[in-house]
Amino acid sequence: MMFKLLISLAVIATVASFSRHLVVRRNNLQMSMSDFQSKVGKFIGIAAMGAALAGPMVPMPAVADGAVSQSTVFRSRTKYGPTILGLTEAASKGDFAKFEEKKIVNAFDLFISSSNAMSGKISKERKATEKSLEAAIYTAVKAKDASKLQSALQQFIEVANLKPEFKQGELGQTDSSGYSPTWGTPRQYIYQR
Image (tube, rainbow, N blue to C red):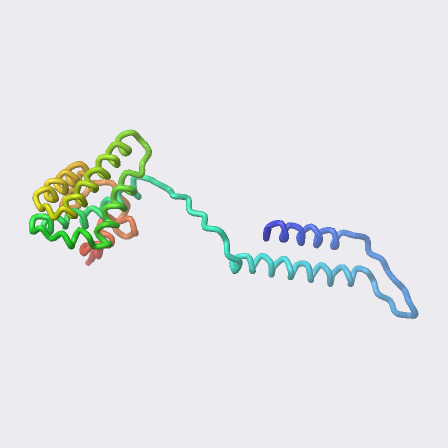
């Protein structure tokens, strides 16, 4: 809508600036059409500029591309993986309340959906396996069964290939960007001397 209006104003300004110049004489008052055209042209130009600048103020629809790459998958693994790995102690102690926290539930869901976002048969199979193991984890939490919880969590960690420490040489971007494997963790700041 805004684009059509802007194009229309630009066409009108172009037509007004290239039309023939006429001189109208009335009772010693002389007004040339070029003066009128320049004023109209200026007005239309100002209106077009105002419409262009007002564009960002009008609510626009969200346009997210949903880009998935090895870096975004790696970033999600390093962001949510340590949270899941940190649950091994809670599982061994039988701390079922820890698993019911919203942050932990979201970590499982976000890890499963984003770390398996690449298209391919292996990602789809791993995603299905991780979802079934997540269901087993929360079934054990509801039943308050610590041994089943421990085994389901251990299987999840093995299937997801989660590692306790970040290893240099794994995929990812530089340490100075938001895609750093340590970003958002206690090790996010790197001190250079």
